[in-house]
Length: 215
Image (cartoon, rainbow, N blue to C red; front, side, top):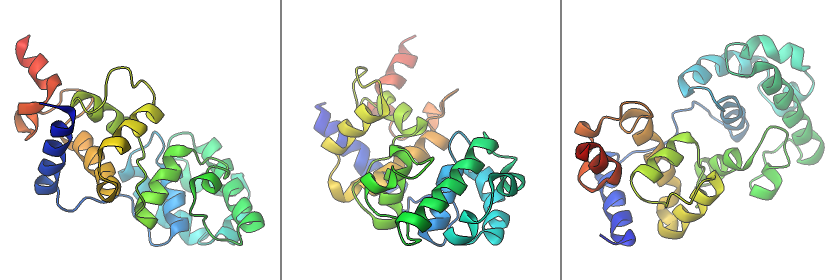
């Protein structure tokens, strides 16, 4: 099987198995999604969805969050990972939106990564989810699944290297959805520990599954 055939087989499978693939974070505006994605770093979407309603009720706009202090934000997010640094980043992000972006979340990678607490992964999530752009955010699930399925070589050892390989081979129109396909597959089937190979529709072409069977 050539690499391009592998990509086609994986994409065809996901189109059938997960026809609707979207973020599991709850949001209703670009600002609320940005807040949720920032909170989701090394934290589950389930936990973030428990936190954001009260947080965004208290600070629903960039202006209101910019006027707060990290100490005022902290109690709302104390149950997520790294709440102290995330509280500082949220306030700093909101203040920059007010000061430099007319209270609007910017829509380019270059501008998004200027915001405190916003890295390339978060910026790519925003571009893919809000503006349906061909941006591939590589989190731990995408990184793991891409390697296990043989979509990227072992030499792709960084999220950026994986991102570049994926966008090279996935049709641009599929990239925003493919991001979610890989995340959902990694979250519920191709888990970090004890992957459910017997339940996976891709096991027949998965190099990692073949290695496990050969042991």
